[in-house]
Length: 120
Image (tube, rainbow, N blue to C red):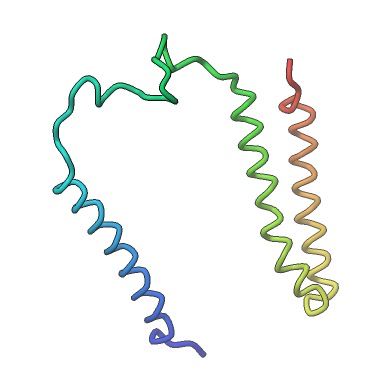
């Protein structure tokens, strides 16, 4: 049985981290320089003068591939605990992982059918 006292260290660590972030942000806002000139507000990239608009359109395929990579990469996070506890989970754990993997495979087949991974 766990009690609320078991979570005290976690709460203290969270409060210290949040306090550090807030204190740092407030201190840099109050202490930091406030003069904004056109030279300071200009973008600087490797010493090369900026030309044109930096907001060139990207293909949505780039972002789609990135999101799909993250989505299918996160599944590995769920597979590690299953692999570690494979023997303790037994047959039921194996069936649940087959269902999980099958669901991911259906999603992957849907993505392939829609042509989300094709570059033109």
